[in-house]
Image 1: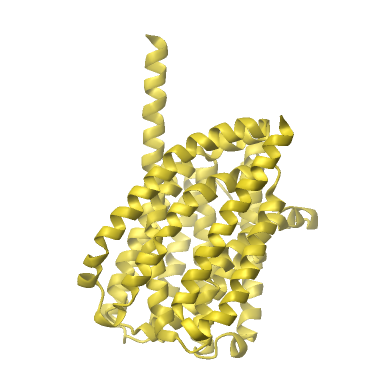
Image 2: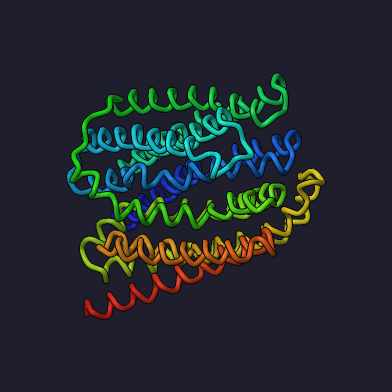
Length: 416
């Protein structure tokens, strides 16, 4: 009887943790969707394409400029339990590194994205490379220490400021890309300060940068390479679409891709609840890690299939929500809905490779997929626009999924 009661309590705790993790994933996405559906009624696909190209350049540079600080922090908390020290190091690197790279990107603006002014480009990069990344680091820290509920509150704070920003833009600003960048930067800075204050109040952490040794920076390089390659794979096609003169298609592609990737939300929520257990199991042995990963995929695969199938059936309703000039995004959504299904296998296996000591191999596989994707886009985008971007992304994700599985099975075979 006591055993049944304990099992029931564990199941309730798991459901509760999953619910809060779902809030962590859902809140930023829902706020972004509301933000988007309001925004597309006030800016053109061309401006939206330029904006997403600018933010994509920032997003692509973040992992390398932060030296994988978030992942190093996660491992440090799990192995040493030095929470304060792990946070201070990650905060310092994540604050300083991206600001240095931001200045370099501004200097290269004429070559990278001449369609946007210097000040507007700087504000868009600041939002991506400082506001977003530090907010995500704070949430990631809270999840790493098991404070999922507090992480959800941080997400709600950030979302509230973001929705206030879009309201201010619609109600009081002239509807230009320049004004949008200014409003987002101001409200974004306010939201970041609020999130950091909430983190300090709830966890007692210092918000003062500290010196980080070179060896500590180099520790995160393999993680940074893997995450950077994955980020490049997801967004490198957007600057290329704009660069080849497909600004409007770039905007529609960004919209369609964003909507399709809503299907990742349940997948990420499930994975969040198994992060700590996978770290322990993977460090113990690959076989233990594989058994847990198999159990995870029994949840992620059917859930992702159901979500993608349901979303596909509901895509005609998007015509009621999207302005006519964004109507082409509906076809893009239909094509990209395959990605959550592929990632329902790819993410769990990839995470096991990381915690099992094969993070460098994971990084190289991802980098190879990135190179193939980028070269294919250079050749195909001038002829096929967004269709090339979508096709090469799906092909690269499939290649990564297969390669991760092959490497893992070989490692499991050697371990027997």
